[in-house]
Amino acid sequence: MPRRKPRARNHGSDSAPLGDVFGRTERGPDDDDVYVVRTIPGTRATKTYRCPGCDHEIPPGVAHIVAWAADGGEDDRRHWHRGCWNGRRTRRITRRWS
Image 1 (cartoon, rainbow, N blue to C red):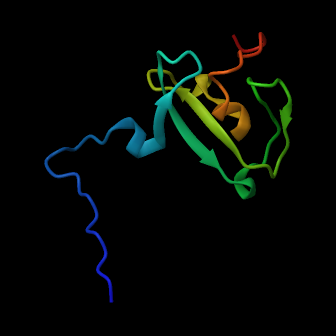
Image 2 (cartoon, rainbow, N blue to C red):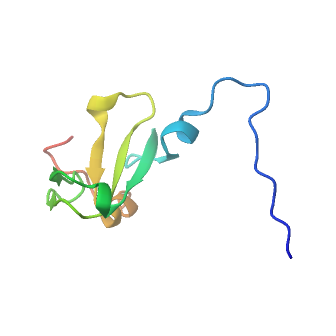
């Protein structure tokens, strides 16, 4: 039977990086800022949101991405379609959110 890799442990540090606690970190639409990114599965998507990438609604039950600036707070969170977040460098953010 193959052996599994041991899990990485955070020895000697009480504070975990922001990305480890809330999600992964990625570069944002402007490529200068770091964003915390979480994937929301469709089963947990219970409200309607408006995507800043395309200005269309994300209805309940649709999997999507939540992203916010690493130095921002809860009010800075934005819900994106996966395709809009992945194409964030090739398109502009709609005026409504900029």
